[in-house]
Length: 431
Image (cartoon, rainbow, N blue to C red; front, side, top):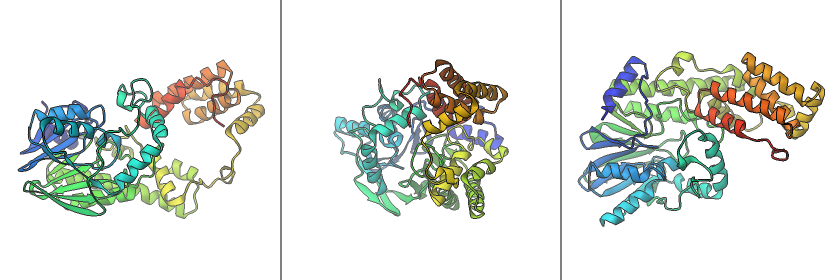
């Protein structure tokens, strides 16, 4: 079994991620006396107390039982308290397995603690069940994980029916004492509006949930609701100010050593702050979203850091989320305020170009030359103008397949892969 703290120290100190940093092994590692991490999607972090275990996050619906099994190989103690760091389904979906395990052992049902906004998230998930299944299938379409798929062997509901509702909630801070262990829960908006991070003073440890994910922060996801990158940075700086000696994220490797943790937290915080500041500076000058998206960049040497690589989310999407947060949905282009239907625009462009085939041929040539942004737009117009044309659809598929291969982030790959899979049969296109 890998020594996770030694592995993370080597990767951070060398700057070389020569081994996976986001692992889903379903294995448990004890990273400090009485502190264990089960590497799953998401991880579960467990702490022993005199009254049982305090566990942060329950993992997902199809991994929860494996997480419980791994925990039971380490401790037979009851799970006294289960803390949701936030309400995403990969953190709460496995809670039913924890409840079932307690019942099977004759233990009391775990007390579930979360921020007050988690209940509102659950209500939203139930109201938008079909939409969330669709977008997760698109986002994770290339992953062979049935818990993330729509249809077939995927979940019948996005939020599983057996997810345990919180028993105890808070709004800003909450002090817990379980079996002699003091835990301070703190709220911070970042990836979500309902996020909790925890300070455990006796262990000099922070359970940070998704505030650190060993990828560029998930602060821009194009298919999900608002994220809060500036408040995310503030939470990271609050963690750093406590000078923790153990950092326990819900994705990626745990980190040991006060100086190393401070460096990581402050680097991620500074990167987010700089990105937000530069977007706002351009907005204050009257720039359009098009200008902002194409001018604001994160330096390549920052994106090369092992814990900031844009392999899940990416800075361009975070830029758009900053715009949405501070500027609303209009992008500054007057033609986009009340635009024509996409099908009408595509038909007009195709007519001006000399037909959809001309657009498709140009898209193929641009893709071959490496201009994939422009190639995708022309391929999209061509396919929208001539949805029943097999040759045009074939060009569109090839362009998006090439785009998927060229993209670094899972979010981009998922959307472009979905576009490539789209058969584009007549009548299937929206608009």
